[in-house]
Each structure stands twice: as structure tokens, then as C-alpha cells.
Image (cartoon, rainbow, N blue to C red; front, side, top):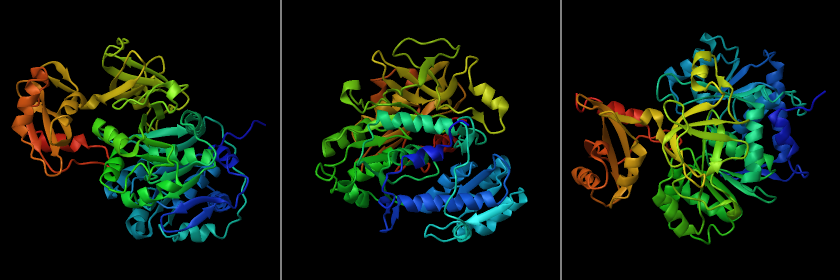
Length: 509
């Protein structure tokens, strides 16, 4: 019989020999040993197996972040079922869609949401609804407590489905990206080597766990290395900085770095034992990259990935592989193919902008119950069209210029918002900007800039536009510039440009 390719088996094999050492330490003073993780996941896996679910059954989960929620994820893998994490911000209509589309056999929600979530789930044919609170309460744990704490991980192959991640759905309905045990494990193994994970590493885990970054990249990284985690249910910049002397690795989205830079306690001494700061999920401003280096002595490593592919590229960890360049996402990871193509599918020269396509063992097999959409998103020779626009320079560094759906076609010319934003962000007094395309009777589409000023600074929209006129071709200049206090963001800190487009779509009507 072949070896068990269940991702849980690989993670469990990496647990340290001393199972009674601390695996997770929470922000409210709880300590979980590796033995606790082994026993807890076994009991929840046994509960799931006792329900008589069909092969490939989905377990949909919308709960607050807790160590027990992490155990539920691991237990789902262990029992051989498919994990379906749902953003805690999703409301009724969204949950109705996900439950209707994925048809989960099991739904787990917070105790406070049981009333309305269970109603949706039972109407959609879900057999089992459990609750899980963030303070070790709920029917899931009550039922699991009656199960045995020993369980043999169910046999799985590399091609068996492990998780379905719904993309944020900024255009049309969300799509469920199907990720296999092989996709997830191969990526975790590559990152373990590429990011230099070593014995004694301690991870600060301050990200949500319904998303690739916190659930797969951070969690698998620590578990596959047998590393202790300092666990924050919610990000608190002061408290995270306070714990840095006890840690070596931190992963965050750009917003978290900006919030820590606002704390006077962020000093080179506070980061003295830290080995690596990683940023992803949204573009890191060059200013943040520079300021972090100045304040801490550390160079942030920026990388690039997607729900459909997990991690694709990374700036180098080891100096021998090159420097970490702000504004880029580094090189394709070992085993990942990445190419840039024009609209006709032809390769573009180094430094030219085009659509990014990828392939590799980490790339998903398709979207849940959407064969036509899946076919559309892959090229005839099997490369996945990411929908991101970017370029590769002569040295091989990859730069993301934006999403293809964010591309503005003004008077027949292609305008890349990220390019314009780069110029605006360099202007005095500007903290951040977003450029979106809106309908225009003459040009088809034109750019509109939305700018956030730095605290205490005064920024004038008309001055921004007149300054850009001396720097850029006329067709790239936004027709209007609005100064606001904040930009709409999703939970991972990404600017929600679809909301900005909606807000300004009638400007020139």
C-alpha cells in the first residue's frame, strides 16, 4: 500500500519528540501542548467520522479565530473531509450562496449566529450544524469530548480534495477554488526550505484563519517545522511588538506593518531576535518598506500568491539568492512556472507588461462545479491565467502592476492604475491612493483618483492632477481626484476597488 499523502499526516510527522512542550501560547495566557493538538484533532476527527458522512463531504466553518478553530481545520483533514473556511464578515445573503453552492454536510458557526445560520443550512439540506465559540465553548467541543483521543489519519492521495476557498468575488459570484492535499503540502514544503525555517523558530500568528495567508502559509509553516506559535485572536500592534523578543518570524498584511510603525515601542531592540518579517495579501507601499527598514533594521520579504495557487513567488531569504527589492514580489518559487503574455497569448519581452500565467504542483485543479469557468481560466497548454498584470525584469524579479479587471482602457490606450498610484503616493502629504476606471461618454473610460492624506497634511485634488500632468502621458491622467480619510478595505487589507467604481460610476454620465 502506498504511503498516506494526507496533509495532516505530514504535519503530524513534524511534531517535536517532546509532545508535552508548548505548541501554542494564546494572547490570553492559555498554553496548548503538541499532545493537546494531537488529542484534540483526533477527537474532533472521530466526531466527524461518527456522522456517517459521504466521501468528499464538505465541512463549512464560519467562526472566530481560536486554537480550537485551528484544530477543527486539522481534524477535517485528518478525517479525510474537505474544509471550507468562510470569512467572519459574511452576512446572510453570502452565507446562503456559499451553503447553497458547496452543499456542506456539516456547518460550524458561532453560538450567537446559530439561529439564522442553522436555518439556512437545514433549508439547503445540511444534516449537521454545530457551534464553536472563541472561549472553548459550543456544541462541537461538547460532542467531541465524548470521542476517543486516538485516530488514524484517513488515507488520501495528492489529488484528493483538502479545501475549497471561495474567492472574494469582486466581479460576479464568488468561485470555489478546489485545493488538494498535494497542492497544500508541496507549497508548504517549498516554503519551509525557501524561507529558511529552522529549529527554535517561533511564529507570531496574528492573521485570520479563513484565508490562504493565515490558514495555509503561516499555519502550515509553523506546524511543518514543529515550531511554537504565539497566537493572537485579533491583531494588537502594542501586544505584538511586546512579544517580538520571544519570537523569530512574523507574517502580516501591509496594514499591520503600518499600524506597528505608529507605535513608539517599535525599535531595533524590540526586533533584535526576529529572523524574518513577511508581507503579502495586498501591495506593500515602498514607503512602508523603507520606513520599516529604517526603524527596525529588518528588510521585509514581500511575496505573491492567490487562493487558487497558494504562494507563487517570493523575494529571496538568503542574500546569496539576491536582495529583497521593495515594490517587487521576487522570483518564482522553486517548481513554479511563471510567464507574462500579451492579449494574443504571445510572450512579452523582459520589462514589458502583460498577463501573468502560472503552473506548478501548487496550482489548483479548478473551480467547484464550474467546469466552463475553469476551462476559460486555463490556457490550452495548461497554464492558469491569474488575472494579474505584471512584468519580469532582466534579473527575473516579478512586479505586479494590478488586476486585469482594474485595467482602464481610455480612448483605446491601456492605463494601469498601479503605475499612476505609484506617482501619486510619492507626492508630499499623500499616505495612499487608489485609481479606478469609470464610464466616460468620449473616452469609454477614464481614471478617477481617490487619495488619503497623511495625518496633519493638506492635499489638494486639483494640485495632484496638475503635478501628474508634468510626469505622465495625458491619457494616463485621472480626470478627477478626491481626497478622503480612508479607503474601503476587505479583512485582508486589500482596497475594494469595486466599491470605489460603484461610488463614482455616474460622475461623467
